Image (cartoon, rainbow, N blue to C red; front, top):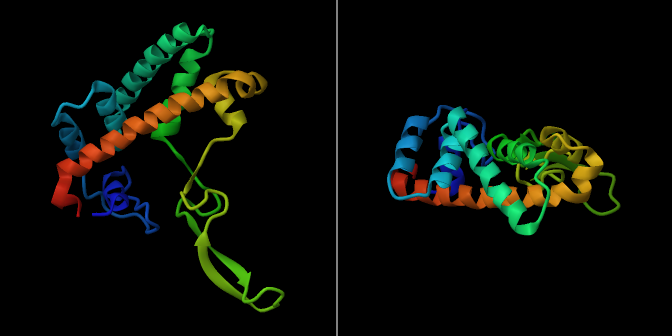
Length: 193
């Protein structure tokens, strides 16, 4: 089965990520949680899976605590200040668990656009094309101002120093999410097809 369809079957509201509308959830959160318990996944990988795909608020808090501890170690190793560790952990967990749907395509990744039939022609035709804002992904990043506000940092200080560090943390969480998806893919096998 297509991994996008697997994701659509796991999301809390049953929204298909391949462009279709909502629908019933075919793989409930309890099955996702059970599948994450099978195997020997590291705790942080399980937390990412429960927080994002099983809608478990306690796992979101535990994931934030894990990110705080991880980022504190990184700050000590690299000689960085630890003033904003808690806010940055909250930011990256929020961005992972609650991706912002693109307001232009409403999360579909595609839009109907009127384009000329030929270059220089006045005749127009409607085409179903990738959204220019989200590049076909259906989600957009929060603005730098919003990211700084969630982290509790001024916008200028966030842009100067902490945005790159937050992006590093977020990339680490995304790699953990990839492990979750590979594990769930193996666990659900034919059911996901």
